[in-house]
Length: 367
Image (cartoon, rainbow, N blue to C red; front, side):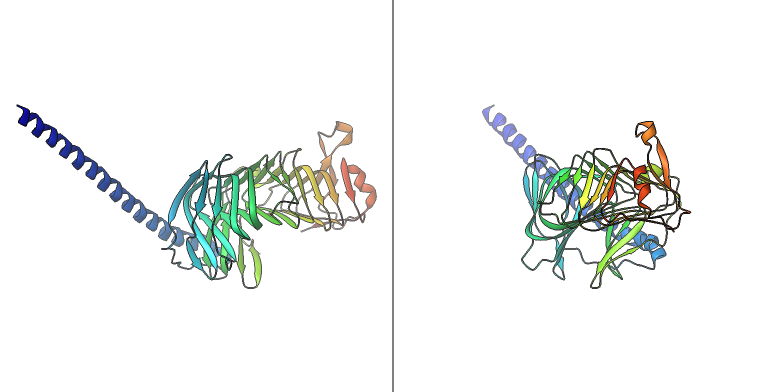
């Protein structure tokens, strides 16, 4: 009887071990299957991008990203991202998803000769950037995700030139580039001050919404909404906006919208809305400390509080509005019409609730 029990016990242990091994093999097979699927996704993504980007006279090039691990990173504690593929001293990290939370942090590792880090995320949903996001060497960094991004006060460290693009990133015949299609940026309670490491900040998405935030990089601040492609090559940066795909998405999803508590401040400010009839609603304060404030739109422009150290330059196919004093600052009134090809009379500054132009010059032109 004892022998039978012992035999049964051994058999049970053996079955459990076999079951455990089967589970491990099953998980390994699933992992291999997942990697194959991701490889096919990257291939089909390349073909689809070439269809989409061809309207700009661009085409994507095949890339060897085998050395770049496809990762899902979701961190509530400090983590380290090892370099993916390294090409021409640039690091290319690839993620299936990237979720960084307020009580966590991540360090992107590089090398002293690294010139830029590209972080490509292939997610149909918005990623979250929060907590500490750091590079171990001072350098430029790009985050791109076609599903969009949500920022909740991330602390960017050792990153002096930062691009956040709600689009897909690829190598093209004109250099590395991102393409904005449907993804949007949503920035909440985010503070970037002059003394922070970020000197140049570029935001790009089909729509850009900023609430309760203070964005003040010391050198440049650029917001560009709408469908477009931006790239980098040996000659510098370039932007292509020759083609805008027709769709029925709400105009507010394709606009730049700042709530009345938001402050955008830098040496110079540049705001651009590229989609037809998509407006710019600047409810907060726009301030340039040394240069111009430049606004381009294919729709109406709503301004509330503004200080330009030099000039305010607006180019629009729509109209420019300001709050009406007689209606308690709530009802907009027309400040300029686009038919006024050139308008720079200082007496009209009184039409905006809080506005000052150091050199007393406004330049508004019809496209």
